[in-house]
Every structure is written in structure tokens, then in C-alpha cells.
Amino acid sequence: MTDTNANAWVSSTHRPMRFPEFVAVVASIMALNPLAMDMMLPALPDIGRSFGITDGNYLQSVLSSFLIGFGIGQFVIGPLSDRFGRRPILLGGMVLYGLASILALFARSFELLLLARALQGIGTSATRVIATSVVRDCYSGRRMASVMSLVMMIFIAVPIIAPSFGQAILIAAQWRGIFVVLMVYGLIALAWSALRLPETLPPSERRKLTPHEVYDSFRQTLTHRQTLGYALAAGGIQGTLFAYIFSSEQVFTGIYHLGHYFPLAFAAIAMSIAIAGFLNSRFVGRLGMRVISHAALATYLAVAVTMLIAAKADVLSLPLYMALSSIAMFSFGLMISNFTALALEPQGHIAGTASSLYGSITTLVGIGVGVTLGQLYDGTLLPFAIGSLICTLTSVAIVLVTERGRLFTPSRQPH
View 1 (tube, one colour):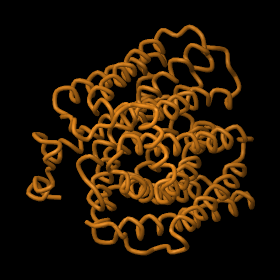
View 2: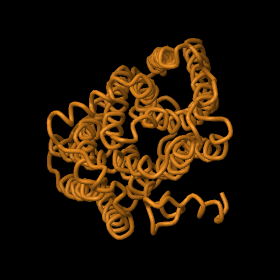
View 3: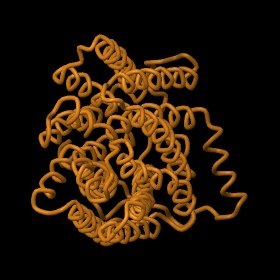
């Protein structure tokens, strides 16, 4: 997208920010979440030694506790932002994130560390919900999908470098140094948002925070076929991603014996999502959200079938595993921004609450799936392959029901 085209995309809602800065600041606040997740991956063995924990599956709770806070926090963030505006809720969440990072830095027990991680998750729930709501405040239809793709492209660059960055910190300092970096990044993102990101929800469009209004917003969101359907489908797919992340350190170091090089393999696979986000931003306006996301879902299913066959036949070598995972991540990158846009497109009048519930559903369903598959890890990839296929088939069925059996049809939403 050239500068001329980018300037043409400037929405009056986010002025005086230009389009490139708007995308960058939204991506930066969304990046708090994957940064706090993926920088911890190489630190899990050191955290285990520090607290005397030898069960690798139990150590996964450093990741799952964060996601539980993230999922639960989203329930309240949306209604609050629809009532009080986007900025105060966003900035409050980022302050909580910083305080939780300090608590984690000085935690002297594993339980206190898990509490700090859950509070970090609650803090980042504000950044994720508000970021999505801000995009929906400013754009709709295929433009929203395109903007979300650009945001996701930058956002996904974080998981590509985060494990390697975390590994570099471990070389120079102990695992607690990671929380110093997380706190510093949070402060930078907070300052940028406070100084440059305007309020995108005008007072005239804010909703009352009464039980009836909240109930009505939740009802409208949860009873809309398209919103609920794509939220559940995205949750199933996201669950397989969480399972992959939770067990990635064990898989790459335990099965494939990569040792300290595992962040490089993780980054190589994650790069596929960023590429998918870039391509989606280019082609979604021409092809539509449904055509792209449904084709990606079919590809994801094909990968799940192939991985199960290879795992069952005990021929899932490192090159084959990385190739299949890369294709899966590429498909995920095409799905997630379009599923989000499809789910939120009918909910412009309650974007905050809808984004909140969408995020909660996808995250909590994903956590349930991811934790279950992560705890089933037995030193092989067979449980993961079986679980991924079941989840993907379920998501395909949900999309079929949502679209009344019509897949690969052009988006019915306007440009």
C-alpha cells in the first residue's frame, strides 16, 4: 500500500493519526499479549529449576494462567469501554499490566508467579479488546478485514522474535529479566497510546452500564448466528494453536533435540502467519473474507489429517513437522483476521461488548482445548495430532452450520 493510498484510508475517527501510525499503534498494544506469552517459552526450564518443579506439563501453567486471566478479563472490558470510552479502559489495563510485571519480577513462590501472570493476562485483555474495538470504530466490511490483516501482520512478528529474544535475555540475565523487558515495553506502549491514540467512541454512541443494557448487548452478540458461529469456530482453531505453543518447548527439545536452537525453529514456523497477514490485506478486498477464510480452513483440515497419518506411522520427522506446521500457521493467519471481521461486522453499534465476548469465547475455548491437549503430551505428537483433527473438524462443522452449508461464497458485506 503506497503512502497515497494509505492516506486515503485515514478515518476521521482516528485523526490526527495517519493510517500507517494507526496500524502501528494498534499492533503495538496488541503485541503485549504474544510478547508476554512467547518470551516465556525458553525460560520454562529455568523457572522450573528456580521453584523446584520437574513436571514439564505443570510448568505449562505459566502460560495457561496468563491466558485464563486474558480470557476472563475480556468479559468486562467490552461493556466498560462501550460506557466510558476506549482510552481510559485501555490505559488502565496497561497500567495493571505494568504492575503485574513488577509482581512477577519479585515473586518468591510459584503460586505468586501464577497470580502475577493471571493479572498480566487481565491487563492485556484490555489491549486486545480495545484494539479490535478501535479498528471496528474506524472501519467496516472488507476494509476492516484488510486493516486487521495489516495489524495482525505486525502483531504476529512478535511471536517470531519473542522466543529468541527471551533466549538472549537468559544468556545475559536470569529469567526474571524477561519481566523487566515486558515492563519496559509496556511503559513505551502506554506512553505512545496516551500521547497519540485518540478516543474513537464519541459520547453520543456510548451505552449505559445498567444490567438491562449489558444484558441486551450480550444477548445481541450471543444470539447472532454469524457472530457466535465464527467465535466458536475461531476458538476451536485457536485451541490447536495454544496446544502447539504450550508444548513447543517440550516438542522441539524433547522429541527433536534442538536444545537452545528451538526458538529459531519456532520463529521460522511463526513467520508463516505474518506472510499470510500481508497477503490477506492485499487480496481480501478482491476475493472477500469468506472465500479466503474458508479455503484456509480446508487447508488447515488437510494438514491435520496429514499430521495424524504421519504421527501414527511414526514418520513425522523434524522437516516434515516444520513444513506441516508452517502451512497450518499460514492458514491460521488467513483465517483469524477474517473470522474476527466476519464475527464483528454485524455488531458495529456495540463493538466493545461484541469484541469483548468474541475475545472471551475464542480465548476460553482455546484455553480449554490447548490445556487439555498440552496435558496429554506423552513424549510423542500423536495426542496433539488427534486433538487437532477433532478440533478442526468441529470448526468446519460450525462454519457449515453458520453459513447454512454455503462455503467459499463471496463476502456479502460491502467494501
